[in-house]
Amino acid sequence: MNLLQSITDATNEIFETMIMLDITAGDPLEKSVNSFKCSVSGVIGLAGACKGMIAIHTPDTVAKAITGSFLGMEVEEVDDDVTDAIGELANMLGGSIKIVLDSAGKDVTLSIPSCIHGEEYSMDCVADADWVVVPFTIDAGQFLVELQIKNS
Amino acid sequence: MNLDLQQQIIDSTQSVFDTMLMMPLTPGITLTEKVYNFKDSISGMLGFAGDIQGMLTIHCPQDVAFAITSTLLGIDVDEVDDDVKDTVGEMANMILGGIKDGFVEHGVQINLAVPTILAGRSYRVSGMDDALWTTVPFYLDEGEFLVELKLKAPK
Image: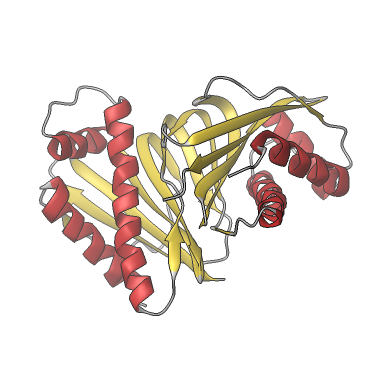
């Protein structure tokens, strides 16, 4: 499975069909990012034939822009609408990656999405897993989509 | 599903502390309110799926995470480094592993995802408000930590 292609395709499709925002994928990062400031992160776990996690990390301004476009409303601050939207985005990414894995004969199921919001926090994954982190750019700024996966 | 979730959490957490850490631990009473905000803390989150979907999270204030890490690894710890993060992630793994065994006895199969560790001065963890939340506080000499189990009703 080409992690980079899968995660890029999934993100592009969700933004085109659900969020209705133009995005541009950048080159995958060579080093994982695990410290975030004034950001919102959505995360969901994968379990089954492979296990792993998918996360989306958005600075507050980007999270508000995504939520505004997704829900069709003005978003002033990072409230429950925003954290729910970013959690739901992680859920949708998980759903797309699940389809890719299932069709490759690796049945996985998704855990439930969670959302983290804070002024300053770090997020690390302890698994010794394959990973890819792709930056995407929208008008409001840049966000990261991260996929970590390992065989069970 | 006829599972006493509070008891599952307490049995598994107690067993991890008895066998791996040999630290005396006192369980408290299940919280009636959800806790979202954490300060100077470390949280180990581990998702699972299968017959039921959900997430187990252990939320430790720094001092508690330091005490657990130094007991488990036999080293002095005074900052949130990889050792502390790995330990908190491993705690989530072990506690959920025990809960998984308890579920199996009731015919409920789950598979575990990989742990994710959050750390920071101030952060908020939300999501799945409509899930079934069970949060149990535990007390050590160094302070209190929370073990939280979120379950989504089976489809």
